[in-house]
Each structure stands twice: as C-alpha cells, then as structure tokens.
Image (cartoon, rainbow, N blue to C red; front, side, top):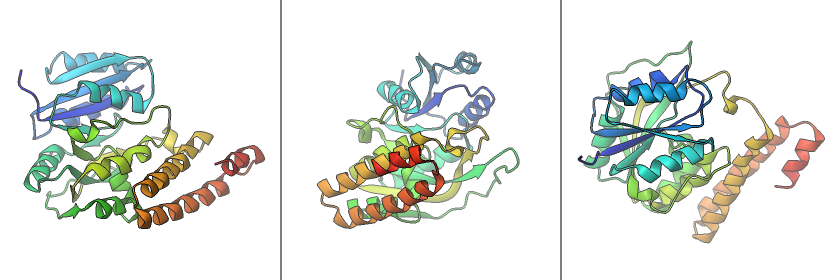
Length: 277
C-alpha cells in the first residue's frame, strides 16, 4: 500500500452527536490522498460504534481503541502510527471546509513551508459557516523570531491552536503533546514553531470551530490555570534560547492573564492557587 501524503488525526471521546458531521467533512475533501486516524479515547457513548462503521466502508480510515487518557494522549497515539509526510489534527466536534486540505497542501508545497495555517471561524447551531468563493490572501513568515513573534501578536490564536494546520510530520520527531493538561496546544506551540523555517498563513475561514454549550473550555475550573503553567514554560524556553524580546512580550501576556483569572476567581481557596504559581 502506498504511503498517504497526509495523516489526519481525530481524537474521539463521547461525541456521538457531532462525530458523523466531522468525519463526513473530512471524507468529502477535494484532496483525497490521506489516511484518517480516529482515536477512540475510551468513549462510553456510541462514538466507538460510529468509528467502526465508517472504517468498514472507507479503507483510508484507521481506528485506535484505547483507554481514556485525554486529548493529548489521543493525539500522541495517532502520531505514533501516522504514515503521511504531512500531519494534521481535527477536533471531533468541529468540521472543515471541503477545500481545506487541498488549499493547505497546495500552499505548503508552493511556498516550500514547514507549516501551512488557515483561519478559522466559530460556529454554533445558530451561527453556521458561510461558504466563500475561496479567493484568499496568504502571508509567508520566515525566520525563527518572526515566526515565534506571532504567538505574541494579533494572530496569536491562529498560530497557537493545533487544529487549523498542516505540518511537516518531521516537526513532531521529538515533540509530543503534554498529557494530563488543559490548554495542551499552548505547551508545545512555541517548540513546533521554533522548528519551522517558513510558515504560510492563509486568510480564509476553512476550519469550523464548533461552540458546544457543554464544552469544558466554556466553563471555568481550576484546571484552566494550566494556561499559566504553559506560558511560564514558554517564558523559560525563550530565555534559554535567547529570544529576549519574545520573553518580555510573553511575560506581559502572563501578567495580563494572571490578573484576568484573578478577577474570575473570587473565593479564597482558588485565589491561593494563583499566588502559588
């Protein structure tokens, strides 16, 4: 069997109401030379059955069934078996434009980049994506500090999140997602971008970020403070690698978010946790 060009990894955990839409948006891609790795992370609903049903009708689909270990663990399991030259991550409650991988692949090849990034839009049951004519602008970022600076600039979220990108798989040779943490993308974004010599950013909303009412990211709990741990690690990384202007910008972000969380947390017990960070 020929190696696929792209490996698409989808972590799956108790998303039976959204999973079919996600998978179908991937199978309907105009770019077809991919493998789809569905990582069933110990689902207790019908998600595992849906994965099995799709894999039985499309041989591009591989299913991993594992004990629950969280989003990072599921992504890491997918990375281990991925065969493509390029790799991508899609969250199982989200979905994508039919042209997303055709555009990401074309742009990463034509620009000779290590990562291609598209824009995303937030959608819900009441706010659905609007198809555009796919005329778009693109912007190339070269040089380590210029690329990393986007983590401190207006495109911070587009450059941080894992799921709106196509990566040269070699970027993950020595990097894995940090397990047991929320804000898992924040922990490795700077490491991945630091390995890239060139990144192309596509100004088109090709990824549809679904806003679930029951999403863990909509509710504040003490584990959300993992974000501050991630930013502290990034500060140390920039210091170690002598990216001092980036270190100073990231320290400013840390302080802004520290006091943002402080204002959210009102009870003494939770506030004490902030003082210990």
